[in-house]
Length: 366
Ligand SMILES: Nc1nc2c(ncn2[C@@H]2O[C@H](COP(=O)(O)OP(=O)(O)OP(=O)(O)O)[C@@H](O)[C@H]2O)c(=O)[nH]1
Image 1 (cartoon, helix red, strand yellow):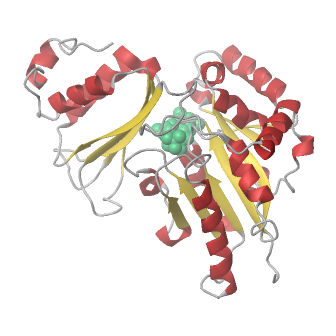
Image 2 (image 1 turned 120 degrees about the vertical axis):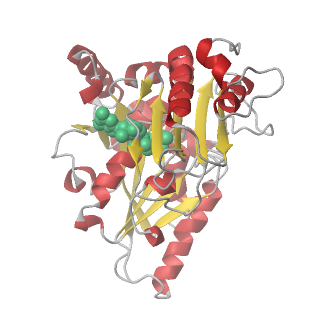
């Protein structure tokens, strides 16, 4: 194997909406990450994330739908092997680093196992480190409710606290920090809002060494080595063996044609205010009636609806409204009917938008 190998691999993880893409965009502006390939694992029927990462598209590799820790693990291995091949045959001039952004629901242990244990990859890549983002507002509740989130923190080399600027009470943030330190005393705890949380602080953590992780991380990684990974997310199909996470559903809403801002605003507000805690993650691009040439990007994480942002143009040329939702115990049918009403496609037994504006509870949800 020629010089340049092994190539550093960093895994960027964190629960749904924790701010992974936001941080990645910021980091990718640094010239130090010039020869970096980004592998994004999308969780959702309609791919959106790759539109939101602001890098030349040839540096971004999109894995197909499915969770990185489960269905597309083979694809990750193939993608990494293909990168080596392209480098060796001169189709890529240089590759200094690979960053893998996992889906928010991914259990990181099998991803790490793929890289650390695969015979075809072990000489070409070295795991530089795991960067786990934790949302300061939703972090505590997320850790209580989702074992994957705890795993993500436990295997981290760097933990980055995001959205501390949105936290109402600084004492809650301190309590969360203490909890994170308890789960993973070995990781450096950084703040996303701190300018020092840059490429130098997050990358080059050194060779990944499971022995330095906390006991739980060692256990999880050990379990992964001992047993083939058992997928326990609900991916929207019904072939999986569902365990605790079968209450989580992921689906997308698509509407061809522009939508008035007021309709989208009211739809999102209804979802958020009535069902916020069950709305694990919502994100999407919207074609606005008022200005269809510039897509509106919306993000929601539980009760928080982030201020919508505008992109200068449609990144892939394809217009239309595409929303991806990841919900917990929220009937998909209810959300679909609500969306149809606001995009003026009410079904026979569903009130139209005007009726909903008068009485937002006209569609019975759970
Ligand atoms: N105020 C504030 N907002 C943030 C911060 N980090 C991220 N956000 C916002 O949070 C929302 C979600 O951020 P993303 O970067 O898309 O989160 P993600 O982890 O990539 O999301 P998934 O890929 O869906 O899991 C966006 O509206 C961001 O602008 C932060 O530190 N402070």
